[in-house]
Length: 202
Image (tube, rainbow, N blue to C red):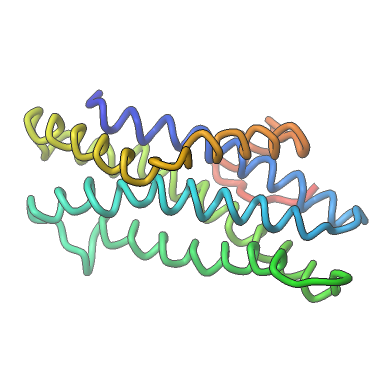
């Protein structure tokens, strides 16, 4: 497997762990756990900072762009679908993060926005990751050359050097660790989600 694809897939595993944690958190809130704005700030911060800016940034700026140069369309087909789902995800993460931006007592509407955003985002991103791991990434390895992947690896390194110059990667990975430790993912739910039963309740 090409090294840039391995990097992206390893990032998927970290993101999936945080999705599992977010699912546990949402279920606890639905069961009566008191909502804290820190939940929304932390989950929103990871999803915006790592899943979107760090991970989707490399996909959109480097991998997808290279695939478009090789003839893939941004208007239809697999790359277009991935881009569309990235945009859908940003709107849902906005709902998750927004619940942490207020002050004072959390309103029922803010709690509902967080849980609703989580319930929408978790299955969306789980299915998105499955499509990339099993369809788009293998497709890229069929159409891009080893030399192109070597160039892409250098592009990834340059991207990460810019994006992580202030220790962003380490900070976000530490945040992921805290979230997973606080709201532990349920392995059975994660497996069911990856198989298609995403975001199921209970």
